[in-house]
Image (cartoon, rainbow, N blue to C red; front, top):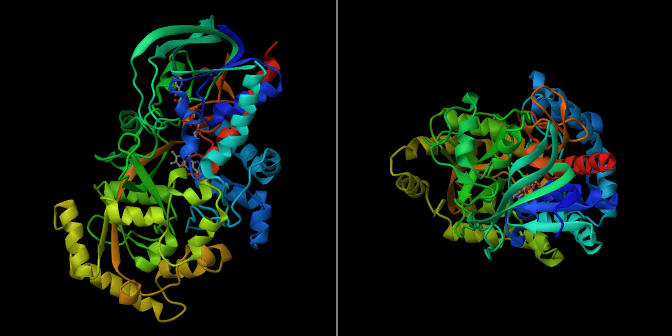
Length: 551
Ligand SMILES: Cc1cc2nc3c(=O)[nH]c(=O)nc-3n(C[C@H](O)[C@H](O)[C@H](O)COP(=O)(O)OP(=O)(O)OC[C@H]3O[C@@H](n4cnc5c(N)ncnc54)[C@H](O)[C@@H]3O)c2cc1C
């Protein structure tokens, strides 16, 4: 086994695989390193829902959605709120990425076999002014086959490279330092971890059995974010979000440990925007955990009432699916680390989905029949399983019973049943007319004018306390760590910049470790479905441009 190659990739997740595939196309020899066993090949993308951000796609047009580069760019910048000097490269990456999503991304992925579920979803609806946060139109395209379907073309290309003798995949190799000659990176060093037979996503041992020292003309770091390392998340938690939650649960496997950021920083690599992160307030404990503190995110339609710890509705426009960070900030600055969804059986059947490939076996398994059953009465099986077995789900016939169970779960009488009843009755009185003043009910009606929402995602407005729509359901929501929006500063070629602003010769970065491009392409807030696409776009850029400098 040679200790030299043209390029070394640190991290066999989506970004690393895309970069490798591009290097293989250019005929380069690549060593791909990953600290995990082969079972976890593909990293986080395997677990993902496979949601991709496209602009003006054929799927959107078929549903009557009018989208454009200009509208998407306005939404992106309205959400990002770039306001720092170090946002120079992130802004450039944002413009380039939105152009990619409105242009070549669709045909390039389609040529490689990627297919999409025909009903486009509407994530991050915003709810502010036209130039504020959120997607003006549905843009979240779920990949047919979810996360594994996104990985498939790139794994195929990398495996072909392996057959041609161009790719050497080395698992259980953990990079701990960069090999430098002067200020130039010319390889990596690290530890070989003991073999591990754990299944995908399960934490693997960190027992060291050897070391390695590898040389290459270029090194591309694609090691992911920090979401699995709660100590790092807390350290980077911004003051504007209130105190970091005492209790955090994990939306990512343990390997998302962020250690590689420190390795690059030790050699002068510039980490920017570390305080920008994308964690979700709608986390529930997985009743069958795979990784440590395994959490699942509820992707809800707009109808559940979102209540704070004391049972008060969150302020407008913090309805489910409108403004992730706005809701998170509201909850954490109130001094609590949890909130509630309150809904009923009719809403859960239509509006609850869970993020993750394993929670959507119909789409992941590409079963048309099972996917069609989403329109039938009854909650999808994974939702029903959580309803029955999940520690956070409470189901009761009457509101007083439900509130009692909520208070018991928390161990404190924080919610007053009669106050909450008044709140819900007031909301329910708004249903009698097809118009009214409750902004959430108006938003639900607005959503249903989009055919996709009307068909499969948003329940017809009805009284929450209507016994015919029951039983009532409360779900305790915890803060789930997921994406890292800041990271290594890179130029449009994916070259990592030194703290002095110059590219570090031989060093590239892509994917989540690079804030999905530039060190923070999303700014403060993301439009969703932009992370996998960000790995693809930045991995492709780093692979292609590094191939050009290899002699
Ligand atoms: C449940 C879930 C649902 C999601 N749904 C979506 C979605 O619908 N749409 C969307 O856009 N995004 C989604 N995401 C986010 C997206 O999947 C990730 O942001 C993306 O896959 C990150 O890819 P990456 O290649 O940058 O890093 P990773 O996938 O984290 O891969 C990095 C790899 O580097 C390895 N590594 C780290 N450090 C070292 C080291 N020192 N030495 C050697 N190897 C190292 C790790 O073991 C890992 O295999 C979801 C994520 C999850 C977990």
